[in-house]
Image (tube, rainbow, N blue to C red):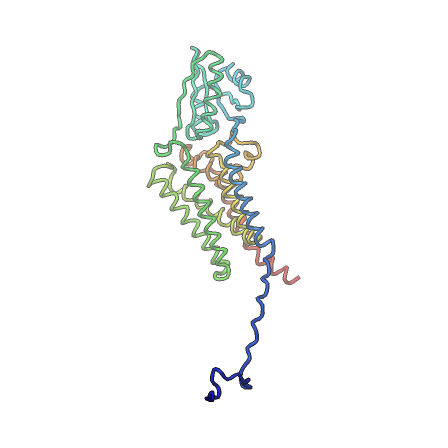
Amino acid sequence: MDTPTGSATDLRPNPTAVVTPDPAPPRARRRPPVRTWLQPMVIALVVVSAFVGCYVGLQRDPRPHRIPLAVTGQRLPAQIHGALGDSVDVRPARDMAAARLAVEHRDVVAALGADGRGRLDLEIAGADGTSTTTAVKTLVGAYAQGAGAHLAVTDVVPLSRYDARGLAGFYMAFGVSLAGFVLAQNALGLAGLLHLRHRFRLLAGGSLAIGAVAAVIAGPVLGSVPAPVIPLVCTLALLAGAAAFTTKLLGTYFGPVGIPAATLLLLTVGNATSGATIGADLLPSTARAVSALLPPGAAVRAITDLSYFDGAHAAVPVATLAVWAVVAAALIGLRPRLTARRAAS
């Protein structure tokens, strides 16, 4: 029986059939440049090394260095200096009342006097931090034991009831710095959507809001920071502004590397050397030199002064915060002009 034309068994070639070429072999994928994956790896390792090195390393072996100590009497100042050496900075005082006043104004960390009956009276400011006051008590206690005298310790500037370890100022400064950092990071991502002046307003307004929220929570709500609210808001707003504008500055000028640089400067080195967890007088010389110059260290000093010492020495750290914020903002504002001038040349 004949097979119908065009059936499945018809083996004759069909001139109208379309021949589909074999698919080409897949092209080999190009490997990404080494820098693409190496840069984030190196940045992450640098950040973790700096963070662990600063926070753990600075607490490894704290040593007192010229802790200011007011000492009364005619012979006792020389005896203390001879026994304790450069661990303390002996400052002779007329009497115990004058020495106590120096403690209350944060001119010295402690006051020491003798009552002439084999007893030494040590008055400390607990608000100066646990690490610093513990170091002073240990040093003076060793001297008293060697001299066969009884040591009586009084805390004339105690910490707040809700800040027994004296770390509320540090955590508040850390949180405000972190919030300013995050604010600037988001502002960098909005560069294509917002004009520069609008980003400036965002950073300035956000910094003020951050400072107000932090001050109200730590002060009136939790009662851990007994500073006056308005000065505290101003101080924390300047800290947030310093962190935000500095982060924006580094991100603007250095691109992706600017954010890790801000992390190292503000959140790592700045907070580790702020003098809250380890008193500034116990830090190594290099850390002690930068402690008061970086925004977190300046903020911790200002918060402590406002909270416990009537703002006696708050002007300098507050001015330091203002300089950071203003200078960083000015340099950001100059960036478009520099770019235009470079393009024209």
